[in-house]
Image (cartoon, rainbow, N blue to C red; front, side, top):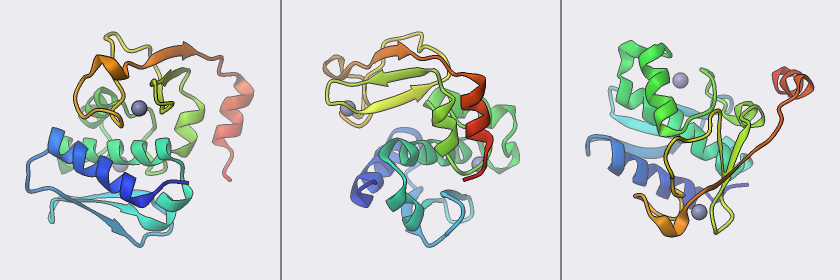
Length: 162
Ligand SMILES: [Zn+2]
Ligand SMILES: [Zn+2]
């Protein structure tokens, strides 16, 4: 369960860090898709219903997915340019707008001193700090990484609709 105010604060921080100031954030009333990038209105939105049900890391992933769309532009769709940007931002999911299953399949788990958890498919090559504790790199909030085993059973479980 996520506090919506917190989700909005991360969204504002991501927009300030990566996007043109014309971009704004808001919640929408979608029931099925977690997030949306509206290029015409330069607006990123997240479903208030799903955000309230998802945990913090899922919501953060949804935001990264949409910020990557905003950076890559509409023509990129979910192609290689979008994917590269999304990975750089720390998005571990696929091309769907539901970040939940992706987390189950990312072997690298990073934990900050405050206990926030992030997921990656690869071990980060540089030290990175927790984006929830500090907007920019800060040694006080370094992430400590551990690798876990992802089994075939995990992959099947993640692929099974819930
Ligand atoms: Zn997308
Ligand atoms: Zn943290």
